[in-house]
Image (tube, rainbow, N blue to C red):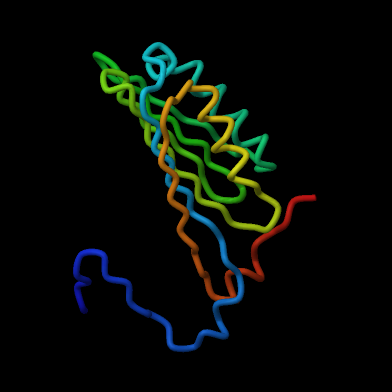
Length: 144
């Protein structure tokens, strides 16, 4: 197995016709956020649930953990994949991961909502295209 070099992109599939559906993976970093919000497990659970629903996602399960002395991790398991948040209140920083499957989910709405809800003064958003084969895409349900 070939090990990729740093920042190297390489093609894993030869048959590009199999790559018919582009799902998105959003990596959102939030800087200079409100300390109290980043350290409030209940608030973050509610915020994550709202972010998922605003994006037209179906929340299946929501789990979270409060760390000592500070910090929270919360994950929303979605019918369309997942949405997670990890916080470092002492650094006023949060990392968000939104993986989408299906055509009706709007993760950009979740991102805007989370930026506002956590009062982030700065943010960085990276979007990665995911290209599952057509066999997977045909099994993805759309939400009406």
